[in-house]
Image 1 (cartoon, rainbow, N blue to C red):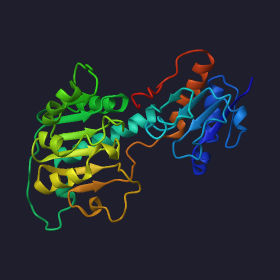
Image 2 (cartoon, one colour):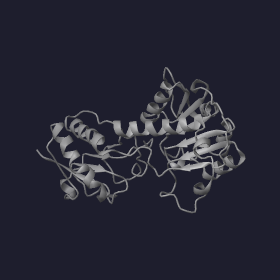
Image 3 (cartoon, rainbow, N blue to C red):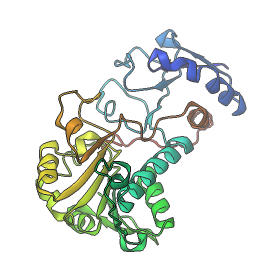
Image 4 (cartoon, helix red, strand yellow):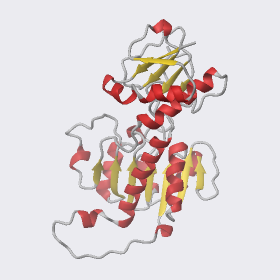
Length: 310
């Protein structure tokens, strides 16, 4: 029997997916009709992006699952019309892209590269950084993406700690958890990388108090979610020197408004939500595999716990 999959993402994304998704379905042994417009009552699966026009899932009476193309699902988890399983995207391309971006900016701050890249006074001022083993790095959020970044940094010799809301263990990453562990985790890292989901429990996890736990002159790298940071508190910490520099890829409002103080701040790097883009070629395999698994009665990959928010 042919299955119907609705592509519910921005129309400009269609050209990226219209060939690779059917190829992935075929490779998985599936007979799936993919289209931008299908009678809601005939839709079996929705390949979804939260910025699509589909907000009410009530008309989709035959729907079996919603397969999100993004890692972030906070825009859909509270949708009361969604009654079927929801998965988030975790795939090789997304993960590898995030690892490369995080490692690149971690090394940039560790080595002090900005001072050489931007040196209008042509100052000859050699400065030897510590070895990676002597630099503490903390990753807030050690799920799939955070753990991949932590492991890559461990391979480079960094002294890495990770923090999560619930306890986790890793043989090469010092793991902290819960409210009690947050202070210790932040105190560990001169470079702090945020890879937490946006949930009520993680809103403003970096605030005036928690920023004070970090070593003076620390660096913040945020490719996670803009809601994780209290912007006013971060600007104050940058002004006092408690935080030396913040590299920010995500913001509460995107695109970041032109008048926002982050743009002009000398110790803030703004990047346009580019750390980890979903790549059609690699995510198509995950979408196809989840449809195959669901049709075979097997557990879905990366199933969202909607109560937890991720």
